[in-house]
Length: 390
Image 1: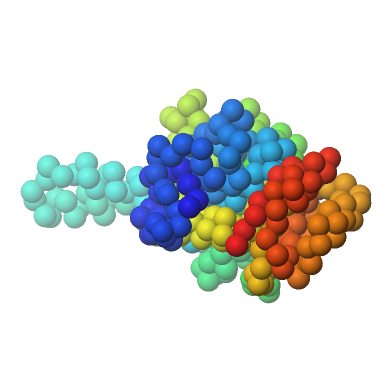
Image 2 (image 1 turned 135 degrees about the vertical axis):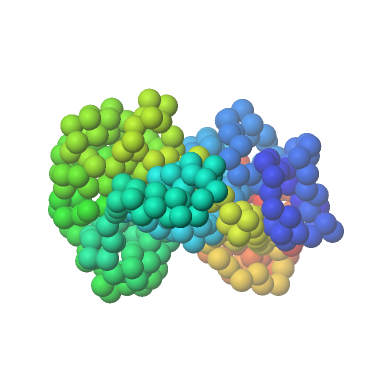
């Protein structure tokens, strides 16, 4: 029986993916094998000795101490793409709200609620509608920074609206490249994208190299009067540089999912309260994906969508499976197979992959592994932990 501790409200559809005859699930579970959470903030001190995996029902893992997890051999999962449509639709709403003063028009119409004379109401509406005049998105240029699951969907939707779309992503994956519409013009650098775009939308993960990437220098390259949309993460945009660009009127509008206290009253700024993944569908999709990944890892050792260990998928064979995490150092495979050979354990199948400083192994052997074998494997200096499955 595997023990899974949950934090936050995890959608029931996700929890249902963890059968109760194999998993004990709850918020008060002691010594869990795994954690399933959304935005709950974890510290390195929360990583107990029994913990082997953490699944974040969402794309960002800035609330998880990933480096400490790697050192402890704890696999951290996220759910890329599960909330992509939800974020895409919010970005489209932001584009439309920026192009047309819909919010102002709604507020004005509501201010007329005391009028009972239909003729007077119609006269005022017709007289004042010019105050809320906007422009069409068709023919305008959208620059998409980051062409992953969300960015590629935003790009496709913008094309459907008749916009010209520029894209930039130096680390685009093969899968993402296949998803990207051919009409998206790939840019070689960010200044070129900024200078040609009426709108720029950000869809990159928060990493050390993306923190503050939209800084004073970057904003200088923006087309005067253009609009910046940030539905990725707040720290990607340098707040001081943003304020200066707005104050000088170089940047026309800023629309983001992360309110900034001293810009709340700025008429050129529009904030939503972190609504990107706040739909029933997105929450369910993320919960289901996170639970399925946890279940597969705990039962078979397979890894999908980990942010700190490589993807490893090996179809289970007859016998017993060993799952070993280790530091990525030369000679480790030889040391492992030597231990198995000394104990007369025949290897049926195995797969080893590395990612940066860490590696992961799945090894299927014909006979059960004794405590002597497990202890010998654990004593190999670069091995972090060993699990027995099956």
